[in-house]
Structure formats: structure tokens, C-alpha cells
Image (cartoon, rainbow, N blue to C red):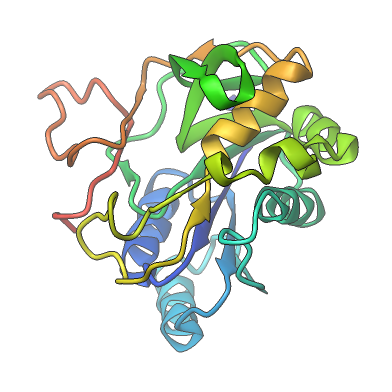
Length: 238
């Protein structure tokens, strides 16, 4: 029997990808909990329409949970701290899969690696933090509930070292993707900060070969044998 999995992701002016992702999750995981956290203003009318359609198409599946939150990704690591609190309060599974709205689910997972933190592992130097560590992309990773609770309870995310100028980047101009809003706001480097905290707590990242995530270019192609269950980012196909 496959262990229960819960999924969560944020939305911010990208409801079209969120709707695609909800139906992909539900198609492959009809009984899984789905948690969507709005990071500030979102088209909640559209999301409620998606909810109504979801409930008609999948009448035997649990409804997804939609939480309207303040805009925090341009503030700092309170964004992740808030997300983890929502996950702990609104999901029940031991394994939580975090996705980005523009992640694409091609099929169900064939296997779940042993480990408390699983995903597409890369080596990352972080000069401004004066350290290097193994890094898992936020496009898709799995984390055990006990690790999420440990990170949340530690309050390490809220440390001053993650509030420097280097902790933020120009996401919507210099790193703009297809379909992004046009804005000058900077957002904090969630992947770098969360991964640094996990490493500081001794959580070992485990490679998950069914996931492929990058921030460079669209990942529209998947091998004919569907080697990857999830790729990121995918924005040009629905």
C-alpha cells in the first residue's frame, strides 16, 4: 500500500498554473490532501470556481484547502515560517510534497526514497553565508512532518543573517518567466534559506531521481518513457 501524501503550494498571480496543478495532483492522487496558500492578493473568485469544478469532477475526493495569507515572499523568511505553520495545521500525512504552481506532474511517483528530505539535489556554494551545502530545488521536494515541525519550532528561518540584501533577488525583472507579473519588488531566496536551515539542523538531502527541477529554461520535454514524474518549470503547455 502506498503511503499517504499531502501536497502544498503557494499562489501569487499565477492561478492558471495552480488550476492545472490541482487537477494533475487529483488525477494521480485522488485521496491526497491539497493545501493552497495565497501569498497576498489572488484571484480568489477564480480559485473558488476551480474548487466548484474540482468538486464536480472529483466528487469522491476530499476538497482542497485554500488559505488566504498576507504577501510575505517580498518580506523575508516569514513566508516559509507561515507556510510550515499552515502545513502543520491543515495536513495529516507524514510525507508532505511541496510544489511550485508551474511544476508539471506527468505521472504518479514510482518510488519514494528513504529519507526525511527528498528531491533534486545539487551542490550550492553560498558565498554571502560563507558556507557551501547540498541544495534541493523548491520546484518539487518531499519533507517529513517531523522535519517541518523541527524547522518551524527552531525559528532559525527568522534569523538576521537571512535578512541581508543578498537574501533577496530581482525575481520579476532580471529573472522573469513567461506569464509573470511585471513588478520591481524583490523576493527572498526561499530555496537557499530553507536549505541552509535544513543543513544546519543536520537534515540530509536525498536524491529523488523522478524529479527534475531547474530555474533555467522551460522543461517541456520528458523522455518517452516518462523518466520524470515531475519537472519544473513548465509554462507553455496546459
